[in-house]
Amino acid sequence: MQSIERLPNGLDLIQDDAFFKLGQDSTLLSYFAKPRRFANMLDLGAGVGTLSLLCWRADLKITGLELQEGAIEIFCKSIEYNKLENVKAVQGDLKQIRNYFSHSSMDYVVCNPPYFKSGSGKVKALDAHALARMDGEATIEDISVAISYVLKSGGKCAMVFRPERLITLITALGRVRLTPKRLRLVHQTTEKAPSAVLIECRKGGSSDGLVIEPPLIINNQDGTFTDEYLKIYNK
Image (cartoon, rainbow, N blue to C red):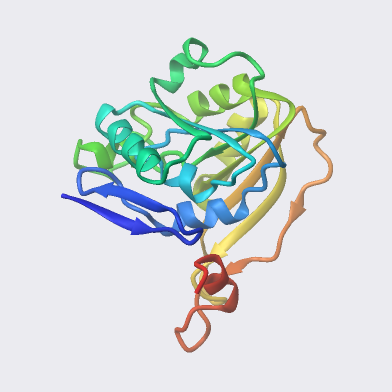
């Protein structure tokens, strides 16, 4: 069943029960990502276009690459529904990214990659939801290579990932000259361990100069949302 979700920036996202719906991680990533003005931006593994629409600005040129045909169809519906002239959806396998994009053609890449290693037991169902959560279709190494290929020298990428696999992510990124420059941990409360990590890398950047930003806290002590979290959701 399809539904329409109003995003914090006022755009409408068409969703389907067969695919991942709008989640907190994508919303937080769109808040964390800082593409420069008039950037060419790629949403890698775009799904139904959630990140593309969350990051939308009139000055950006946004392309979403997604493997699953059904997700691309819904993405295209959202583009048409919102009358967006600067967003396009491309169906394809990121492991074959050279077939769709020129080398060094993007200024910024956003990606909400699979969190779990294939065979880890974290995901059991082999459906569209499982494909999005597990790296069976594309590993973090595949994703890193694709990002490095499309990014210009000095270009940046922003991702959200699980803290327990942060070393795996940074190692894969480092192999293809993507250097972490900003990092922010997400905590449900100040007492709980981080549930997600937001990271921005620069292609060709030196190993110095990593900025660890203050943690992003979701809930206050009394269970209410923090002021920053409410700001992200425009509430």
